[in-house]
Image 1: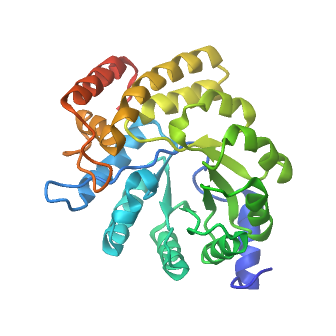
Image 2: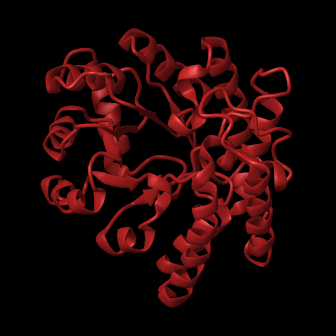
Length: 313
């Protein structure tokens, strides 16, 4: 038992964890949804909901918002609240799981975001760590967030967060059973995380799933890539899990080709294919803009055209 969690809350949580009682599985391809902005620069809630429906048609197993690729730190409190409501309401009707981002420089605000996510019916929450290298401060932050709800908690490991820290959090916080590992080389860290938790800490990757095939070989539970080509990632995952490894590797090769083009143009390169695929109206960003050239748009159009025979949505 630790501070901030009642005995009843703790026992209910233990029961849900022991039975795996989450309505939707937290495993597979969970794209990070982009934040669509309209011509006036405001968050487009209709396009945000349309993106979740698109990801479901793609066969994604989950959707995550708002994190780094979602430009979360440019969003106002109201935008985060309204966006979370739009995504949760849309996701309730779909097969995919919804993971809502709750990070904030203020732990009290992160707790409020987490509690709202639970009220909205999210399947899980995720949080980046605070901007400190003090392991005790990082642990305390996650303790506060993790004790705020009964939802499964993903820790998004970035910067200098170590496997030892993640295992300490896993042992201390009953809800923290998932990690999105982007600190260091996740392939080098997965063994320690799995052995140190006896396989109970479930590890997802980031970095656009570039090493997805090797990740599946080593026991990763999922990946959180960008949204625009979620159907290619989802097919790679599904094929591999079905034992069709050659076909999975072929599909991943197609993903790497389009990813090369997308990666050249920052956040605009992640959003423009969503425009081409009829999900967004604009590719506006609030940061990292101005990189998408006419030549870049041409290459991304060709990438979408190349991928058409393999797309689901």
